[in-house]
Length: 322
Image (cartoon, rainbow, N blue to C red; front, side, top):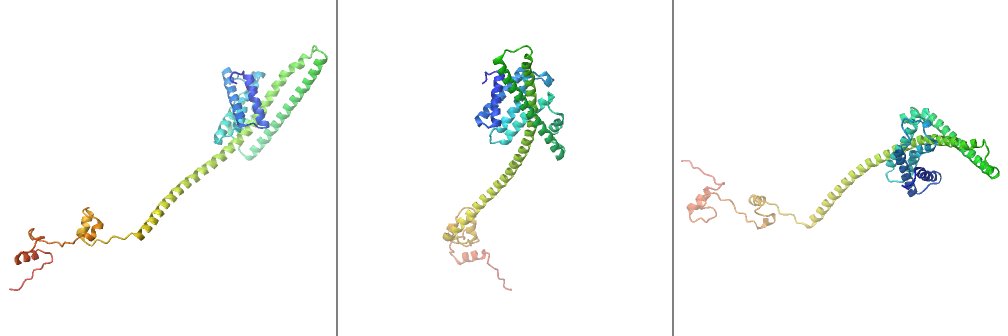
C-alpha cells in the first residue's frame, strides 16, 4: 500500500470510509483505513497540492477530493474502539478542526457557520436551534444535489452507450462529454459542503460526549479516593480488633505477675539486674546502716550491737533529766 499512487490510495481509503458509514466494518479494517488516510495526508503535504493563499477557484478539479482526507480520517477514528474513549475523541476533534480550518481558508465554509466555529457555540439556545436548522437545510440541499448529479450522469452514460452502439460521435456532441468535467467539479464541491455540515455537527456531539466522560471520570476518581481511605480505616480497625481479641484470649490462660512490693527488687528490675519472674526468689534484706564492719556481720559483743542500733534510722535518743 505504501507504493500506491495518491489517487489509488485515496480511492482505497474512500471505499473503507463508505463501507464504515453505510454498513459498518470490523476494527482491523477501520485501522487500515486510518493508516491509508494518514499516508494520503503525508503524500498531499509532500506534493504541496494546496497552499494557504489559494481559494477553491485555484484548486484543480482532480485535487478537490483530497481536501476530504482529514474529514474521512476523523470519522474513521471516531469509530475506533479503545479503552481511553476521551483520547479517541480528542484526536478525532483535532482532525475535524483541521478540516474546517482549511476549508475556511479556501472560502468554502458558509459565513453563518464561521461564528459558530470561532466561538465554539452560539450565544443562546435560540441561536443554537436556528443554526442547526439552517445547517440541516444545507445538508439536505447538498444531498439532493448530489443525487441529481448522480442521476444525470447515469442518464448521460446510458445515452452515450446507446448512441455509441448505433452511430459514431458527431460534431457538436463533444460538448456533452466535456460537461463531465464541470459536473465532477460541482459534485466534489457539493460533497465538501456536505462534509462541512457533518463535521460541525460531529464536532459538537463529540464535545458533549467528552464533557460527559470527563465528569464521570472525575466522579469515579473522587469516589475512588474515598474508597481507598475507607479501606485503610477498615484495615486498621481489623488489626486493632484482632489485637484486642487475641489479648482477651491470652488473658484467660495467663496468670498475672505478682505485684512488686520491694523497692530494692523494683530497682533491680528497672536496671536490668533481675527479672519480674524472679520476684518469688528474692530474699528481702533490710538495710543496715553503720560502719562497714557491722553491715552483714554478726555482733560479737554487746558494744557492737548497741553501736549498730544507734546507726539505724528508727533509733531515738532518750534524754533523762539530770
